[in-house]
Every structure is written in C-alpha cells, then in structure tokens.
Image (cartoon, rainbow, N blue to C red; front, top):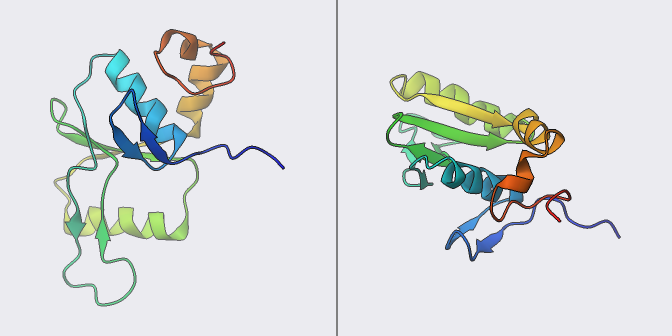
Length: 124
C-alpha cells in the first residue's frame, strides 16, 4: 500500500494541528525565514449565502504583510468557490495561493535540507 503523502496531525515542532504535510512544511518555511504568521486565526462568513460554501478559513495570516496565504496542492470546486466568494464579499483581504510549484521548487533545489523539520525525501 502506498504511503499517505499529505498527513494531517499535530507537529511537535510547531505545537499545533495542520491539515497536511504541505501546511506543516509551509509553517516550517515561514519560521525558517523568520516571517511572523498565525495558523487559521480567522474564519470569514458569507452571510448572504444560504446553501453550499458559507464560510472560509484561510491557512496562514502574515500580519506584517497583511495578507493571507492559502496552501493548495490542487484546486477543488469547493476551494474555487471559497476564493471567489472571498473576492466578492471581502475584497480588501489579500489572498496568496501557495501551490505545488512552491514545494516542488524547494525540493528540486534541495533547499528543504536547510529548513528544520521539513518533511521531504531529501532531508536525510
């Protein structure tokens, strides 16, 4: 059986629960870069929506940049809906998508070896 690639759970080095290894790795990256962040500190509600996606909780808040960072390996229809509704109902909130290309680049360049606790095959 193949090993599960994106494991949710609490990371001791972080001290909080994350939904995937990519979210954990992004937190490790931000810490390594000494970028202040909060993990899932707020939830946005779409009050006028009666069915379907009625709220959105971005992954990371970077207070010094005043922007949200969302880790996305792939864009599901639900994720796309949340982002469209955020743009409509909260246009003042900046959301940056951190996609698979970010993680592939970090691993391809083997930068992951420099980041403490990074969960990748090249870390040994």
